[in-house]
Length: 177
Image (cartoon, one colour):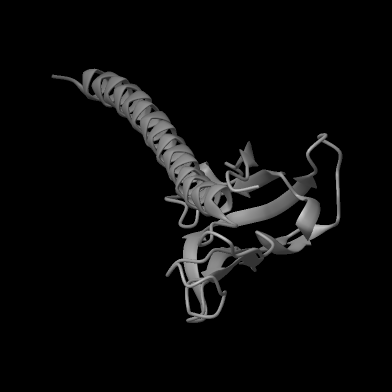
């Protein structure tokens, strides 16, 4: 074996190793992007399912009792009421529920402090519609709530996953109004 043969074999080995590293890096990038996308979608799904369920049930009360299902209809915060114990009054923990965004954390406050529900929320917006489908600022007139939620990865696996975000929107009709 001559020096020329050794140099040629080292050059070929270098090319093979370079292409192998490039393929592995592409695989890592695809994995990180996919993991970030799954995290974004799961976070949004959890948040929307929980919020929609509570909004749908807002205004539930004992027969003969009457109160507003929504007491605060703000663009980034909603306050719901439900007569959970059936006594006809809104008085105990869990009967007034607030959903709001603080920083990048979606929080739910049912009387015990604003508990974190989902991290990595970029934006949260509520639009309130009356029975005719018109936007209304009056909490007592609300019949449908449109929720728009934008989430991003809370813990990006690498720099490859930066910038992954998704926006989800759902319409929720108040069942008890």
